[in-house]
Length: 405
Image (tube, rainbow, N blue to C red; front, side, top):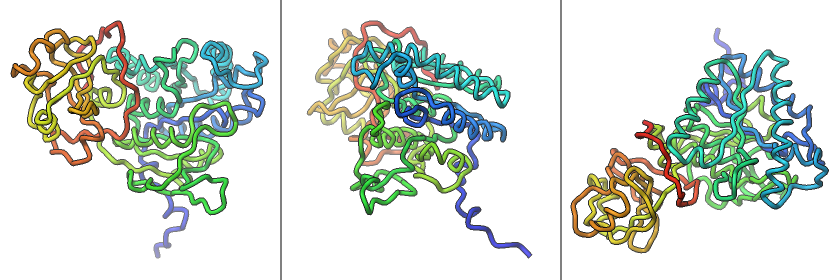
């Protein structure tokens, strides 16, 4: 006779059990002591869990904060520096200590690690994006565990991710992960401050509607990190919008999370995985300019009526060339979409409002939230949950080739 399923079996999460490539992000507060140095016991405890998961044949990419925090104690700093130069100095000392500690810890299981340092500029340019993908997948194919972090030593304020939650969401796209696990010092998403009586943990989030009325806090009390619950939810939106489910829980529950048990909060998929080309354009490209449109052009854009002609353009700003990302604005200046320009700035400036020349091809276009809310035809259903990088203009153009997808 068949025995009834046990409660533990009923509680397992299928999305987690099916995952064969997982991105795990851990925050600084889960790796360091109260005074800012690396906590070897915490690092070893995390590696124990990751190594056991790796032994089942699941590939692991670890996005680890902690470089700046690890450099505080060796430099005699009592708290995280507020100035960029101080943060860079701490990261310069701490990054080596962090990777050395991971190297020694994973070596206990016969596993090698590889260090991958990224800036937003690396993700925001197509050539670097493609190279980062190739490097990471090669490291994985050779059996090593990539340890990813923001390159705090060289990143300027203009090209920073700001926190590793966003970085982890982008890396989950980059390596085509099946699951993203965000580890913190809080055991999930609560509907209010978890320190207050009555706050309830959300076990599942199926979309934006489940977050109505939820209070999102900033960075934790440890003072060594930069993120907070707001950035973690934002990262979850980015990942789930492209078909990657997310588990958010405390680092001490990492084993349960990776085993598929109902710990923390599970953010379910809200969209489908697009091509690498569109994922880059949606979440990581850095627009070089803006193109303002007439109301009719915006309406046609949202309805998916083919390419955007220059007759619908009223204003052009920035210095871009054909193939550069640009943001498409409505008459009030709100961002409607992002696309790859078919014409250079100078040429479009001359043709705007009086030519049928194509400005952005339909295959090189993604609609942003304000336009996507009304629903789209299937061929243009590429909604973006949240914008990650601010619009910036770079003096140098990237030397990348054609699209990624």
